Length: 314
Image (tube, rainbow, N blue to C red; front, side, top):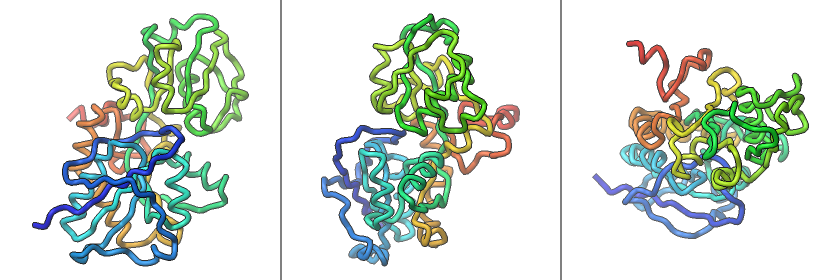
């Protein structure tokens, strides 16, 4: 069997990490510092390796990409090489996809994608689910959100989608109440009631976990919590409720609209949507993330700790 040919391109940028990342490079991964600067014209046709393998460039975010490296191992058996382009800025993988520098990206939930398409006038399209990562509230100072005192500080992400999501979680926990028409992306201006006068400190998402020693509580994305050494199953004092409101935060593989039915790209999705990747997901994230393609979206409230209540009852 020929060796796995896969390179991980690390694109160093200034903006800090926003959403979740996944694992350290595998031993067979090649890493370099070149930028993804291929033009859209050059990406009209799939590239090929010297062995004739088809190459698909996929943009991701974060240093830990063990899930996609596992998918790449499976793809290699079928003569498909996944060229994993690592970004450190959550705005750039969509820009790179839109201009043709990469073929696919996989780093964002649907709410984030919708916000990008709206702001940029693009129509980037989800073609397959990856994972769902509920967010949680953490604290070094209290064991329950009921212990928050008047004027205490809670850190939340400062971007529209994740900040709004954090506010919804705080409403679920009874800390605040939002206006009835706040929608999925509320801001602090949409807070209708704040009985304890909680101060909300809006920070870059990657900085929220680092702020934990300095605030009374923080709302942290599951992947970023793991990166910070936290255990989402044991260290949270409140976890986002599983239900219809969480569906927009399922993460996807995303393509340009003209490629939504591309058979090669559908294959790439299928290599991720495997039991092998799901098993690694549960191992790495301690049951705090879900293989989204396996979820019954009509019954999201039945899931907990990476499994459904129905599975646990068997």
